[in-house]
Image (tube, protein in one colour):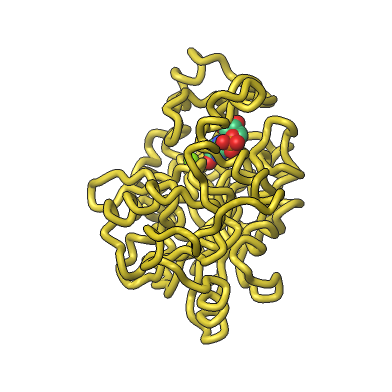
Length: 338
Ligand code: IMP
Ligand code: MG
C-alpha cells in the first residue's frame, strides 16, 4: 500500500505535518524521502516540540516506522547525522548506497555564484552544484563515505518488499510542483523535477505500485526566493492576514498570495492526485483552529473546502487546523476512502 505525498504549490505547504499524521494514523511500516535534498525543510510539531527536518523523513514520529532516503536524493552527511541524533532514530534511519553527497565546495559555490545566489535565490545548501556533478558523473556517493557506513541500505529493494507484503509505505515528496526543473517557473526553480512521477523515480518504485497520491495545498500560496507569484500580496498585507512566514532552511521571509486555482488545477494535471490535503485553514478562519471534525468547522471554512472540491474534482480528505501532528480533520472514512 503506497501513498505518495507531494506539494501542489511552491513548497512549504505543510507536507511534513500531513506525513507525520499519516505515519501514525495509518501505522505505516516505512516512510521514504524523495526530492532534491537538504534544501527542503519539513516542520513537524510532535509532543510539544518543533522539529525542522531537512533529511530525515517526517514519519519519524511513528517509532515503529523504518525511515529511508531514496537514491535520487542528495545527502549532506553532517545534516543527516545531526538529525539522526535529534530524532533519536539510529537503527531505523537509512540512506541508499547511491545517494549523492554534497560537499563543502558545492555549498560555497551555491552561496557565491551570482546567478544561483543573486538571481535565482537558492537555499545555498549546495544542491544545484551537486546535481550538476551527478550529471557529470563525478559526484561522490553515500557508499564511499565512512561516516555513513552504518546507515547504508538498498532502499528501493526494502521499499518494494514492504509494498509487496501489503504493508503501508509513504513516499515523502519535497519542494513543490512549481519549483520543478521541468514543470515550474524556470529558471526560478530547483535542480530537479519534483512532481509525483519524479518522487517515484527517486525512491525506485514503479508507477503501477502506487495506491494513493495526496496533493498538498496550503490555504494560501507562498514562495521563497526569486520568480513569479501570481496575486502576490505586499508584505504588510500578508502580515495582516497572518500569511507572513519565515523559511525553514534559510530564515528568509516567504512571499505570499491567496489560494490560486490556476496553479492548483495545473498541479492536479501534473500529479494526478487521488486525494487533496488542505493545510493551515486556521489561518483563514480563526475558529477552525484545532478542529478535528469536519462538521465543527465554521460555515465559510466548509464552503472554502467544497469550492476546492468543485473546482478540482478531487476529494479533500485531510484538512490541517494547526501545527500539531494531530491537528487534522481526517475525512477519509466518511468519504469512503479508508
Ligand atoms: P535550490 O533548490 O536551493 O537550488 O533553490 C532554488 C529555488 O527553489 C529557490 O527559489 C528556493 O527558495 C526554492 N526552494 C528549494 N527548496 C525549497 C523548499 O523546500 N521549499 C521552498 N522553496 C524551496
Ligand atoms: Mg519547507
